[in-house]
Length: 454
Ligand SMILES: Nc1ncnc2c1ncn2[C@@H]1O[C@H](COP(=O)(O)OP(=O)(O)OP(=O)(O)O)[C@@H](O)[C@H]1O
Ligand SMILES: [Mg+2]
Image (cartoon, rainbow, N blue to C red; front, side):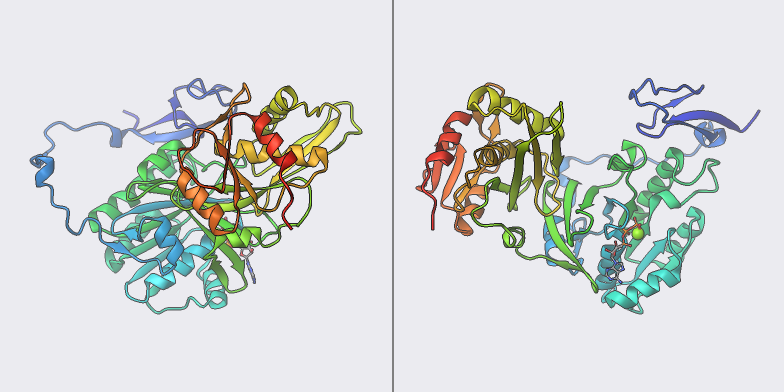
């Protein structure tokens, strides 16, 4: 019997089919099916195989000790975002655009950890020389930090078994291949195999592991969703080209809360943590300019004040332009429609540009209100008072809806001197700094009428 069979695997969702077609019938994406060879031997169960049985335990009898021993990455805000450092045996996937600084961050972390523990940094993307040059530049040349330039999974596994490191970096999963699978490195089967095997090894030997994952041009992690399911934690590293800020967001974490973030600044000597992101993002805020509103953003316990900007100008085109940087274009269109309907702000002959300053990408609904106010401010050419901050979701009937983490947001805004905070009316916190609004109309009245602070 033939040992290998050819299947066509969707590179987006991982579904496999016996024949090729232009569209994946599982996820609906076009041109994502790629031919891959599967070794049949591996997938058939032999009869008479010896099995082992581990007795299940009552949950109350499960031992807690050691399982959550955490290793510090040597970067305070990263430890905090991960829930207190990386757990022994934890497998973390870090993704981000090319050149954003993934390898730099991981080399810094590897170097910090190597002060006390043995670390193995495996690179499939660069030569050991290239890593050395980066190490020299950022001051990461510890003797306990072993570098290995290798792309073969089996060689990597035997190196890990021989060296017994306590921390591994794998840069990147898409460049590593297993010789047991015929398809090319980076294909779904390979990514699945490599991440699966490395995770298995990390768990059995209790090695903390950070894996780099490349992203597709749409910005999602290359390879199937299954990769995100296999690992314990997923963090995304993002920032704007040409800017030094880098934001690390925790997307998933089996050992802590998701939604946490850490902010860095890219310097010659590597990434430097920004201990106070709010003041960092506010440092270049223009004074007395229309179209700028401060938004206390958070998806976890740590809020950050960011500036939302809008520019409304007369269009020279038949169809006015809508541009969104750092936010969803659909969201911008909806907010524009709401402003036209409930705010009498007519934008049919205006171009509307919007931006989150600092390269942050924000998808949370609480952005609606500051975005709407920034657009209105630019439309009226009336600056919003510098002590105003705002957050809240806007419903399609113009109502302002409550959002998560209200208390955290208010606290952060007040800490930075914002004492006119426009919030949803349902906010059950009593504070003289709060201006509660029920509808977008009320919120617009507030920014129109508030006396500008000197
Ligand atoms: N000599 C230098 N001085 C300052 N910054 C540098 C220097 N060399 C590189 N960088 C910065 O480091 C970035 C590259 O970082 P790094 O190689 O860690 O990115 P990466 O996310 O691993 O990229 P890739 O996906 O291509 O592997 C560059 O975009 C640049 O901002
Ligand atoms: Mg890299």
